[in-house]
Amino acid sequence: MRRARTVVLVAAAVGLLTRMLIAANKPGPADVHIFRGFAVAVARYGPIRIYEQPLPGLPVYNHPPLAGWMLLGLNELSELGIPFGSLIRAPASIADFCCALLVFEIVRRRRSSGAAVACGVGVALSPVLIATSGYHGNTDAVAITFALAAAHLLVDRKAPLAAGLAAALSISVKFIPVVTLPALFVVALRAGRPALLRFTAAFTALIALVWGPVLATVPQHLEENVLEYAGGDHRLWGIVRFADLAGLPDSFITFVQGDGHFLFVLACVAAGVWLALLRPAQLPVVVAFTMGLLLLLSTASALQYLTWAAAGLFVIGFWEGAAYSCLLGLTALLGYMGRSAVRWSETVMHLGEAGWAVLAVGLACGVRAILAATPSAPAPPCAAGPAPLTAPRASRPAGSPLR
Image 1 (cartoon, rainbow, N blue to C red):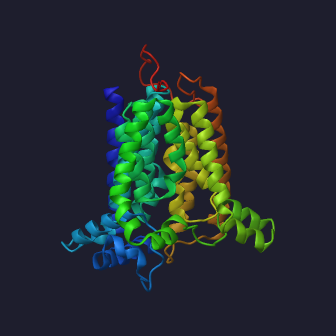
Image 2 (cartoon, rainbow, N blue to C red):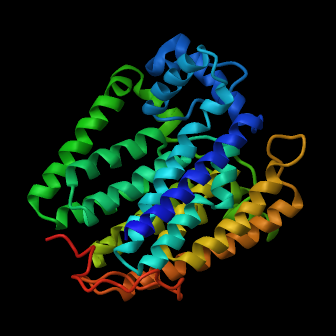
Image 3 (cartoon, one colour):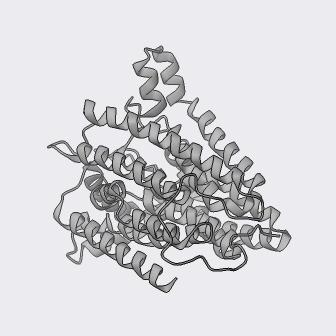
C-alpha cells in the first residue's frame, strides 16, 4: 500500500507541475481577466459589500462568500509581484493534486489496490482536469474536492466533525455541491445521534462564520447573485442543446433554462438521497454520481463545468473516468484553442454531445455498482479495472456502513 500511495503521489505531483506550468505560460480564457476584476473590486469594497456593487464591465458576481476572501488574498499576493494569472489557477490545480490522493483512498476501500492506483493517477493526469484547472482556473475543482472529502470523512474515516467542515467549505467556494448535502445529512442521521450532532454542529458553525456576515448585511443581493444563479442562456450542452437540435419551441427552452432548471436540481437531490438511503456505505460514490448527474442535466454550459464529473467518474470506475476525461479533454482543448478565449465550434459541440452520452453511460454504471453492493460491503466496479499491484489483503471490508 505504501508503494501504491507513492505512485499516486508522484503522478499527482507531475500533474500539479503540468498545471502550474500551463498557468504560468498561458494567458488563459476570459475568466482569468474577470477574476482579476473581481479581485480588485473585492479589495475595494470588501468580500461582503461586493454583492451590492454594480461592477461595470464585469459579469454578475455569483461566487459564495469564501471565494471573496480567497480573491482578497490573491490580490494581496499579486501586489507582491506574483502574476495574478498564475495565482487564480493555483487553487484548482492544488485541489486536483489533493483529489487524486483522495480518489485513491476512496477506491482502495472498495476495490483492488491496482484499481485505486489507476483511478488516482487518472485524476492526476486527466486531460479535462488539466485543461479546466491549469488553463481555465475557476473554483469548480476546489468545490468538488471538498464534497468528495466530506463523504470520505463521514463514511470511510468515521470523522463527522471534519466531514461537516468539508461539506460547508464545498458550498462556500462554489454553490454547486449543494445537491450533495441532503445525502450527506441522510447518512449522518443513519450514523446515530452523536455523529449527526457533530456533523451538523461543524457544518452550521462554519456556515454561520462564512455566510453569516453576508446574510446579515446584503441578503437580497446574495440571493439574487448566488442562490438563484441559473447560468447563461446559451444552447451548447446537454438537454438544452438536444432540445434546440430537435426544434423544440423557444418557450420550452426558455422555461428549462429559467425556473424549470430547479426541477433538474431537485431530481439530482432526490437521486442522491435515494441511493444514500439504500447504500450509506457507498456515500463517496453517491456524491460522485450526484455531481455527475448535475452536469448531465445542466441547462447551462461552460467548459469549466466539465470538472464536475471528471474526478467522480474515476470513483465510479477507471474506464468510465478515462473515457470521459479523454473525450471531454479533447473537447476542452479544442474549445480553448484559437484567438477567442473559449470557442464552442461545431466540432466542439459535437464532441460535447458524444461526451454527454459517455457521461450518461458512466452514471448508469455508477448506479448499477452502488445498487450491486450489499449494505455492508463495498461496491463492485461496473467493468473490470486494472489488475491489482499486490494481492488483496485479507481483512474486514472497509467502508462498512455507519451504525
